[in-house]
Image (cartoon, rainbow, N blue to C red; front, top):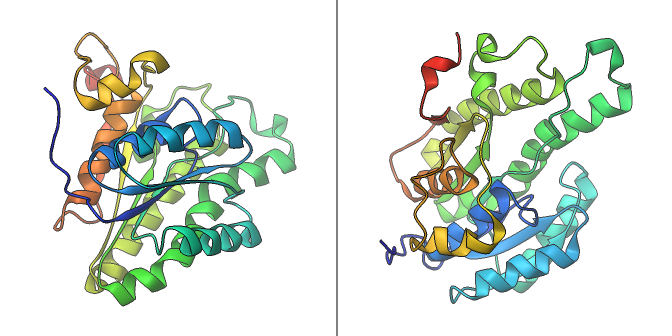
Length: 258
């Protein structure tokens, strides 16, 4: 069934990592469907970001494609200045971009790879929230949501050959969102997250139809990027949900031994 409600009408959302084929892309489209104007952030792929921005405009919303390394303070500041000059102050922040899942022993991780993973997972959350929070406080309304990880909620859910840097970064996001949610609640700001397990990607050619509700996803055994995006959009639309981490482990969570 096609969805017609627009609970986020008039809001401006900044979504990181929105130019790929994963959660960020789907989240940008779901937020646009629900009424928000969207900033489509990408680290490198400007052409793909422009394509997603056009898809956002297809929902009748404003869109801006921006290139920035969200782990770099100067690039985050420059991105926010551009966003404010074109669309306005973002009141919704979705931190989707993150590190690459790359299993390897601790002594096989080069220091530069470790630092890069922490920058993508932890520094980005810190820098983006730091940049967006002052205006959210002034407005008395703000929503921050991030993508964590199911195995970062409980280390026993990880396999023995799981990566070390990726889930550690997600666990740090979980801690930060829970702490921020308590500190910022008095300003009308909520901070939440979604912790997915392995997901199945909906094919690009049916992604828009899936988000519009005209392509059923019941046949997919694992959660898809659309399921994660729908959970993120639900969280930012709720006035009374704060400090929550919604787990999406799949249809058989008991199969993940804890």
